[in-house]
Length: 137
Image (cartoon, rainbow, N blue to C red):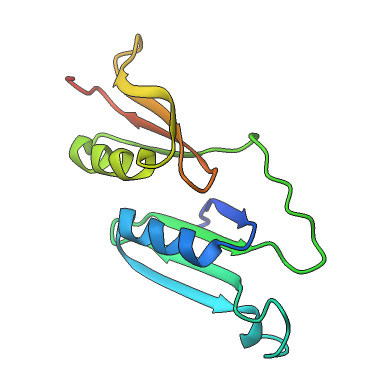
C-alpha cells in the first residue's frame, strides 16, 4: 500500500450531514461508524460519527468525525482542503457544489499564473481551494 495524505476534518456534531454532503459532491463510497459501534450504545454521543471515510471513484479520500466526548472542538482557519488538476469540468462541478450555501473568498477565475483558481468556505466552515491547471477560461 502506498502512503497517502488524507484530509481529516473534525465537526461539532454534524459530521453525518457533512460527510453525506461531501458524498453528494464527490460520489463514491461513504462509510460512517458511530460511537455506539465501539462503545456503550446508550451514551449521549452514541449516534455521532466516530469515524467517517469517503472514497471517491477517482481516488479522492476524505475523512471526518464528530469531536470525541471530552475534547474541545476548536475550529480555525489554519487548514484548507486543496483540489487541483486539469479535469476542468469535474473541478468546476466540485466548486459549484462546495461554494453553494457557503462563502467565496476568491472567485474561481483565471489567475496571473495562468491557472483558474478559487477559494471558498463551505456551509460547514471547511475552507477549500480549487486550482485548474492551465485552464483556458
